[in-house]
Image (tube, rainbow, N blue to C red; front, side):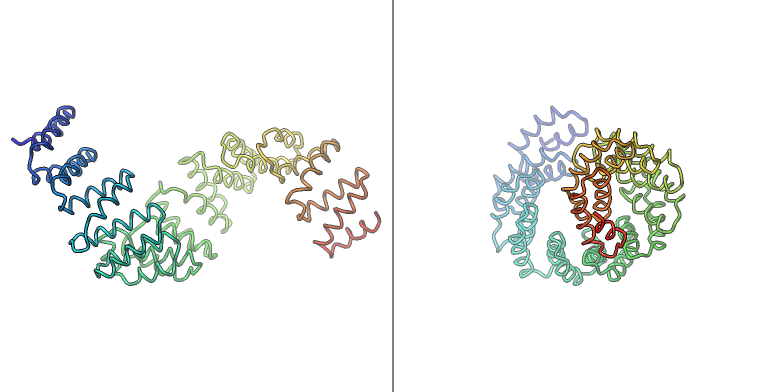
Length: 414
C-alpha cells in the first residue's frame, strides 16, 4: 500500500494525527500521479491545507504542469494570498493551453483587489484568443460588479441563458433584469426577470419582481410575488418590511401587522421593521402595542435616536408631556426633531426657560429651512417677549410661505 493510499484510509478512520505523518511521507516518496490524485481527493474532502501541501510539492517537482499551477493558484486565492496566486499564474505562458484560463483567473484576482482596468485588460485579451461564452460572461460580470449596467447588458445579451445557467448556475436574464432595474427601466427589468423565473425558480428574482412592482405603484402584483416568496422561502432575509409596506399601500393593515410580526419573530433585532410594526399597531388603534414595540427598540443600538424620536411622537399624540421629557436623557446624539418635541413638551408644562434653550439650539440646525418650525419658534419667542428674534424667524418663514396672510399680519403687528 502506498503512502497516499494510507493517507486516505487514515482520513476515513478519523486518525488525523497519523494521517499528517503519513502525508509527509507521501509527499516525500510517492510519484506525481499518485500525489495528483491525492491532492484532488483531499480537496474534494475539504482538507484544503493538506491538499495545498501536496500541490506545492507537485509544482516544485513539475514546474511545467500548468494544471497544477491553476489549482494551486486558486487555493492561494481562496486563502487570500493574492500575490502568491498571481506569481503562479504569470508563470503560464501564452503558448500554453491553460493560458486563457490563467488570464480569466488573473482578472478575478484583480477584480477582487478592485483593480478594474487591469482585470478588464486580461479579460479582453482572453476574448481575443477564444470565443468561449464563459469569457464573455466574465466580462459582463466585471461590468455588472462595477455598476456599468449598459455594458453589462450588452455582454450578457450575447449569451445563451440556458447554457450559462448550466455552466455557472447564474441566470443572464436575472443579471439583465437587475441591470435594467438599476437604470430605472422597470418595464424591461420586469420582462427579463419574469423570463428568468420561467426557466429557473430563484427566490432572489421573486423578491426583485416584488420590489419593482411596488416601486412602480403595482402594489397588488407586488403582494402576489411576496406571497409566493412567503410560501416558498419563508426564511428569505429582509422581505417582511417591503411586504408589509405593500399591504399598507392596499390598506390591509391587519395583514401587514401579521407579516410584520412574523418577520420580527425571525429577526427580533430588525429595528426598521420594529418601527414599521409600531406604526401599523398605531394605525390599528393599538396604542399600547405601538409603545411596546418602540420601547423594545430602545434596547437596540441601531437607529437608537430615531426610536427616541418616534416614541416622543407617540407620547406627544397622547399629550403625555412628562414622558416626552423623560426621553431627553436617552438621546445619544443630536436629533433635532426629537429635541423639538422635547422643547414643545417643556412649553406645554410651562417650563419656558428649558424649552427656549432647546429652541434656540435647534434653530441653528437644518430646521432653519423648515417652515413649520420657524412659525412655531416665532410663536414661542413672542410668548417670551423676544420680539426682534420673533420677527427674524417670521421673516424667514414668510420667505418660504409668502401666502400666509395671518402670519404676515402678525409680522406687521410686531
